[in-house]
Length: 431
Image (cartoon, rainbow, N blue to C red; front, side, top):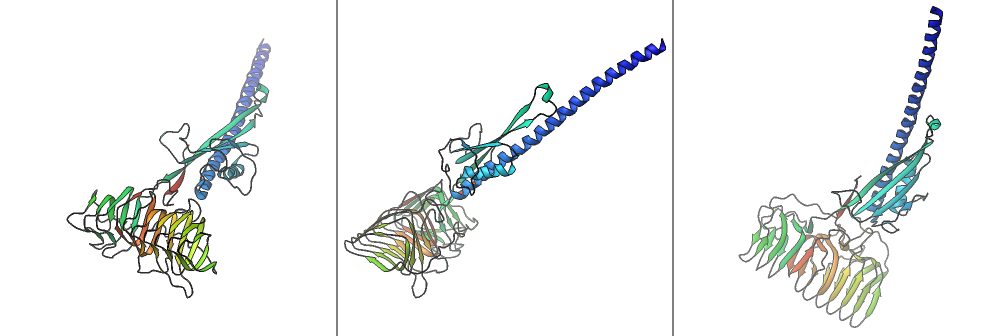
């Protein structure tokens, strides 16, 4: 009898051990498969994060708006080295950080990012990385392959520049002057005056400023009929030159020497080095092709009834050798329509003074000169005078050692940075 009981108990123990081992191996198998799937999930998420971030950084650095493919079009990653678009740059990072076998797609747009609230970048890029995980232990249960995917979205956000006028002189009296019957309006941006002099900013006549003004000094000089609205901010920190790190163009030789136009001349000019500067007077008509014009001595003179046009142009004012630097002068009844490049190293810069060659004569746009000049007037070491019945482009900014305005003008903030290049951008991973 006892032997039979022991046999029955032994059989029960075998069954218990068998069921326990089956459960244990199943649990171990599940743990292994889930662990492997979790590892792959981390890999594809890392790859998606890296791809979206890299694409946004490339777009920021190269001024991409929607790469070289249509906005909203899905791009399937293929090997492209070196990358020529932001999406290709993202794909390379997906390849580096992704698991051994995967697929990746990229998409970018300038709309509101889908599924994301509270974030409105000027450009968003979404990366999707997918792979499969074979189930080693759950294979027998019919679970052969698991699909694993991850997404990440990055954004390029544009930060508009706070000011349209920078007066850089640190201590001069009259560094910033608005005179006569002028009304200076800065829309969406303001004016920075770095002069610590109590009379660094001067308003005379019936001049008015409509827009924010930041003063390093604790006061300014004004007449009885002048005003600033809203009231300026005093004791502000000195503003940094926003183009201080902009590299000067490198050049050599002369493409033209002593170039001048007069009377009824009609000429189309090309970028290059103009030794002795450029002079356009009389009723001459000049068209500037896009590019950088090196004024090697004598500056730029446009006067009388000359008509001048140019899109995507930058004038770099300098002097080497026996050449002497001279200011930019646009006077008389000239009609001038110029715009700075909207991309590239000199995006938004229409006039660029050589920082190493200061001069006291003012760069001048005056009298009845009309038209529009879009971009930054960059004279960090010399004065700038904007007077008479002149008009400005909607998107223009003045950066100069000193600024004098005598004539009504309106400067509007270039929130995208396209026309003045002063807006900044940042990239963030937003999902």
